[in-house]
Length: 314
Ligand SMILES: [Zn+2]
Ligand SMILES: [Zn+2]
Image: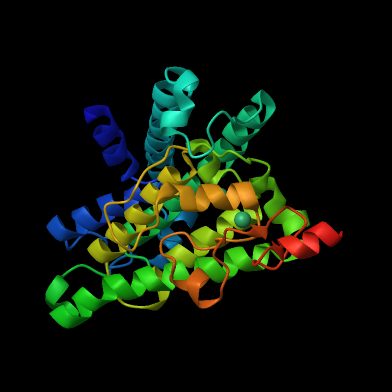
């Protein structure tokens, strides 16, 4: 089991390079003056002496991007590879014991597809994260703050659950919107070609969709004061369960609010239901939880399936 733990811990270091913001955060804790001593902080510098990158607070951006790509891919491949090797290869014959959908596997073509699509999104996400981290570290605009007491402890403590609910709610709506027949066929269907998802499926989707989720998560760091530690903890949590929930491996979460991995696996199996990711709250509120005794399918839109009687009449 120690392997499971170590892989989970690695996953906590994020999928798309946002770990770099961890570095920014730590750096700011110990070097609060960094960024103020950039050419922008000094009155002596003439703005015309600055390079294009310096003017946009992106000096050394190439190192940020390189490092971001390097670590993102290491984490993505080691976690995805772990599940592939220890479950999909070593325990393939015993899939009744561990798999959400026993004896059903992706085709070789879909395995290749998710690996390539996931890697491309990962590369783009890590590049953007590297640029953002560089911008913030060089003193660029952000509403992140670094001292927990700066806005009071109550604000600090409550901002975590609020940020969590914000992501859970907005990603529910966003995901449900992508299940509208038009958007589903044009965009979201790419993610749903994986009827038996694996950890690599977590970021294998249409790039438009991928960037919308990324934007939802990143928006608060430019709009609402949020402690960098709170932001990163919640973000890492979401990435971690993003991969676990697509792994295809039956797992209960340690947190009572987090659904087991079968919840999102069911979404891939039954299509238009279970739209949430990190709680059942919004599916429960809008009656889109999968129910026994209803019929679901890729052409049954709306989130509530069809009654068995109606299905028999057809
Ligand atoms: Zn979906
Ligand atoms: Zn999915």
